[in-house]
Amino acid sequence: GELGADGVLTVHGRMGDMIITGGENVWPVMVERILNNAPGVRECAVVGRPDPEWGESVVAVIVPDADELALEELRDAVKSFLPAYCAPRSLELVEELPKTALGKIQRHLL
Image (cartoon, rainbow, N blue to C red):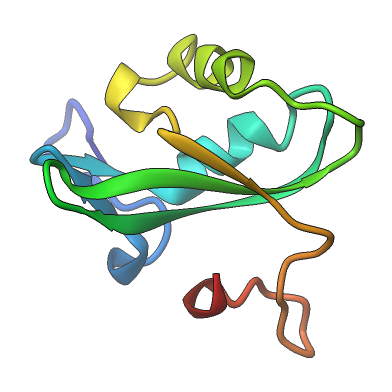
């Protein structure tokens, strides 16, 4: 979320989707917007995974559109727009993302 100059809090995505890593809040939808525009990415979802050190770790689950994807390149793409803690710590490649009949990603299955 963002706190505007007028003091209004704007939430990006659902509160339950927020990832807390190292005490910092990460909105998956913000990271997904960047990754979905990165070369070699057809589609992605960003989720939190339990992490003993950070609480949760940011993980990018990606349907690739290329033979190879480099985690560091994707991390750099995110860090060029968002704070470093928003960048995925790991990458999972899948053939497709699980979706509802309406086409929404089923994050709980990732």
